[in-house]
Amino acid sequence: MKPAPFDYRAVGSPQEAVSALAERPGEARVLAGGQSLVLEMNYRRERPKLLVDINGISELERIEEEGGVLWVGALVRHRDFEEPVSADPLGRLLSRVSRYIGHPPIRTRGTMAGSLAYAHPVAEWPAVAVALDAGIELLGPDGPRAVSAGDFFLRPFATACRPGEMITGVRLPLLGENSGVGFAEQRRTQASFALVAAVATLTVEDGTITAARIGLAGVAGRPIRAREAEEYLLGSPLSAEAFAEAGRRAVRETDPLPEPHAGVAYRRHAVGVLAGRALEQAAADLEGRA
Ligand SMILES: Cc1cc2nc3c(=O)[nH]c(=O)nc-3n(C[C@H](O)[C@H](O)[C@H](O)COP(=O)(O)OP(=O)(O)OC[C@H]3O[C@@H](n4cnc5c(N)ncnc54)[C@H](O)[C@@H]3O)c2cc1C
Image (cartoon, rainbow, N blue to C red; front, side):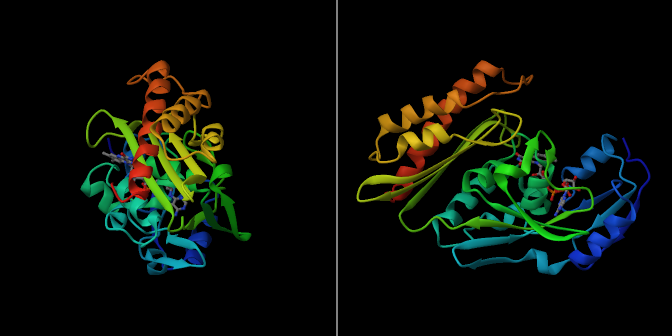
């Protein structure tokens, strides 16, 4: 199908984008990579009256590392992460995860910020953002504001980004040298969306775990953190038994929605296995075995 008629405006700065969005309150959409929006428009599930094309805003293509944070501009594409963008373990995590998103043409156009704004419940970047407690930077008619990833995702395809606002960047905390990272996902084919995915990071001092982060996708209407499993790991050595037990605890924190390709019981089982695997991978990464 073809999209419903719409107006198009290319803008050159975030301020210009916000002014353009304000011209059609609630009826304008930001166009970033277009890899989800154009599809939604072709199915006519989205019928924006105005597309505000932000692809000409070169300042949003930047990635910067400063003060313990990696700042990712709203036009950084999935593919830009394929080679690590930071020497911090975070660079390896983003690189690993990016390769699971769709296939190369999707990764070449699609953006991290667009994926966060779209808020697909099994998308990879939202799970990473929640696991890392990322900050989502927004700009709107009332100026800039930031929302933590834990508060950003409300339910499938719904976020705290208000009509008239746009994401300008994402702040991801660096993990530090004593950290390892892991990612595991179950999907039907190599280019399919995940059925379930798990992100894990571990930080270790003197042989024991001092910080653990587990982000899960596909087990609730929005990405979640497995807090009980994370707490269980604190003070533990890196051990396969501890990771398996953390996986079992993560299952208790899930509430999957029914989905045609993978039932609730299947996804609850899968997430326990995948969380355990992501933790194993994080341990191997820490020990230089990954
Ligand atoms: C065949 C196929 C396979 C895919 N597989 C996967 C997959 O495995 N994993 C995955 O995560 N994704 C997958 N995707 C989706 C892909 O990752 C998209 O790139 C992503 O969801 C949206 O990013 P985008 O930059 O293309 O955004 P767009 O399509 O341009 O926009 C998507 C939505 O976000 C809004 N938006 C975009 N940028 C901003 C911004 N800066 N501020 C405010 N709102 C904004 C738009 O208005 C729109 O509502 C797939 C897509 C296709 C077509």
